Figure (tube, rainbow, N blue to C red):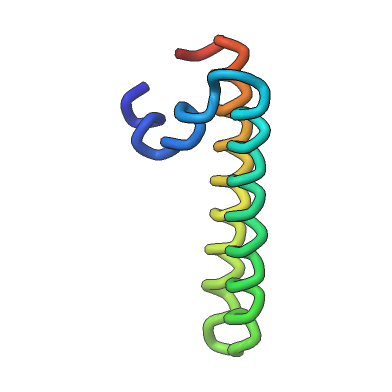
Length: 79
């Protein structure tokens, strides 16, 4: 559980009530959108294209996992 708290600190921080849950989800979505735009721009460079694809996939996975963990903490499935 400590590893999850270190990897996904926002998931455990914004879980007190529904407005905080929505704010936490929006933060994850904004990070995903900004990261996707930056990765999309750098993917235009031919040599870096493959690496950007991998990093983009990992960023999407991080955002999805963060949102799912945040909802599970809010529902008190994990503590």
